Image (cartoon, rainbow over all chains, first blue to last red; front, side, top):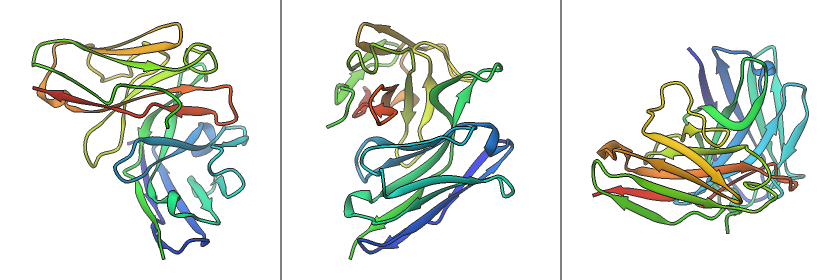
Amino acid sequence: EVQLVESGGGLIQPGGSLRLSCAVSGFTVSNDYMTWVRQAPGKGLEWVSIIYSGGSTYYADSVKGRFTISRDNSKNTLYLQMNSLRAEDTAVYYCAREISSSQGYYYYAMDVWGQGTTVTVSS
Amino acid sequence: QSALTQPASVSGSPGQSITISCSGTSSDVGGYNYVSWYQQHPGKAPKLMIYDVSNRPSGVSNRFSGSKSGNTASLTISGLQAEDEADYYCSSYTSSSTLVVFGGGTKLTVL
């Protein structure tokens, strides 16, 4: 069964760091494009970051230079390292897999989502 | 302010059809066919309903359909059912430094 399970969220003070994990089962994390999306309380979805199967990474302007997406192929796990956290980073963070065709074409759409992990940045 | 513009709310009666619009620019919706739509029930993770403007993932009802004209994409839900009541988000690939943008979301109420 294809499944994503996030962990690592919690309460952190402004300026602090946190690493989110997304344990993948049912497929190989390094073979697909993987994305982080967040949702602030009562707000809409916000795209955060993507890592391509080839390893290239991209970030939203709001987190560029502070967040780092990575993966551990041996653990089949996706990560999001978050540094210099701000109050506005408070959100539920979802990891998601990008949908692809049988020919390996990607559509920048996410067909498998985790349940989310909550990050609260507050003093 | 979200990069893509959606109406804050729409409503319809069971059995009716509704359409949710998603307005962007030539740098996102108008320039690429990477438009997708998500359904989100309260407290749940989003669910992909439409990708590549009009394609449905396996398992999604054919009551859901997508289209695009110029810089505006649309999601149509026909034969409204009570379980369709949820928030709906559009998203698009963008040529800006932020690779993907979402709309602000539309709350669908089934009367």
